[in-house]
Picture 1 (cartoon, helix red, strand yellow):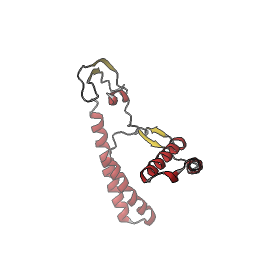
Picture 2 (picture 1 turned 90 degrees about the vertical axis):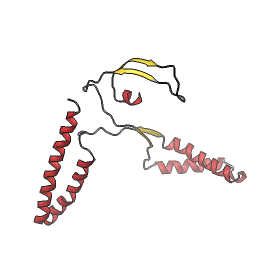
Picture 3 (picture 1 turned 30 degrees about the vertical axis):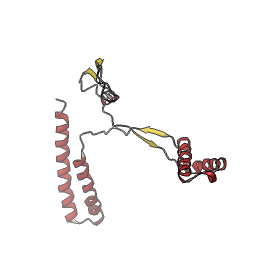
Picture 4 (picture 1 turned 90 degrees about the horizontal axis):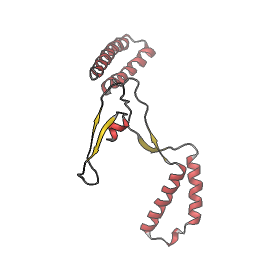
Length: 163
């Protein structure tokens, strides 16, 4: 359900069933698969945003927190727990979690194979330009032809999904 909603697919005839599995209830729904309305989006990841001034802010807040705490009275486990709690609270203030959604690919048909071949073409290209060696240039032409062919095949396969 989350995947369907996050892709922007229109949902109708929603029905929540009475059965319960663990803490989940089955949800039945119908969707309309009109390819023009589906908005493909990459999954979001949650991370902390660390900026250049974050370390200084953390250090200042940590010093203030250490002045307020009396850590000398704690045992080992209490000391560790208190230290982790203080650091976590300071990090939540100085560098809070943010949801990052990567930009969607402009060419979604490019897959790992095409990107790997693209990277493998970069080294001979750089070598060929530096040395003007004929063998590098020949290899570069071959890799370029293979890359073009693979991109055409990938695009064709990608577009076949929608027909």
